[in-house]
Image 1: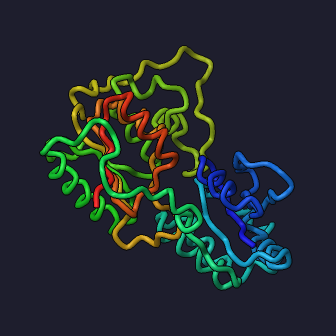
Image 2: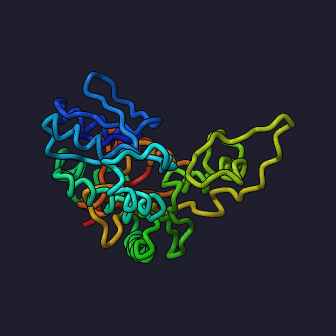
Length: 305
């Protein structure tokens, strides 16, 4: 039996559609969009007991899918079954994404579970190499793609991000903890701080909060502060390309980069010409919808071998 450790986003739903018998495991306080009798809640402080319960239910395989905010630990709530793995879990909470996921997968494997990659369950999420869109990349895009891959390799050494935006050989933006959508939004013509819920707004308004608590951004009782001016996208990245690829030494069983129609919308708002993803290393969530969105926006999608 498979257990999907589900976070946010559409990926957990895509996996459950392929394996409707799978259990869905949600971190307490961070529900996924999935519902039903097979949805279970867990918390870090009692993970040891939860894993034992999964074994008792007949679970032999697990898959990590979707985004999860790193929780704070309540040491008083840690039970005896979890204490032996607490030090590793605590270290994972402050490590980079790949290091954190390696630690978590190590705990799962030591508990007797085989860790499955999302793309093993849904091979169709990895499209074949080629350009499925009406728009095609211009001759200079290959050089920008090479530049982007070199940047991602450098970031990967520091376990930082999996994407960047390049225009004419110049790096316009790089992905960090807030993710690809935030990076693209930072290149949009609209003032970033004027968009409700934008992570940059949250970062400014929630200064002083504990990192990764992801508290709601504060508006305060007074009139909104004027947004800091942001140069228009035409002056930043118009005609550039989003390049996305896994980190060079990444464990591809978890956190494989992904794009979808929302990524296309963000790239279009930023004035980009298209998207380049590494074939076999980037999932495309709903390829037909992603291609259709690209065609409507006049962007190319290059799945580059």
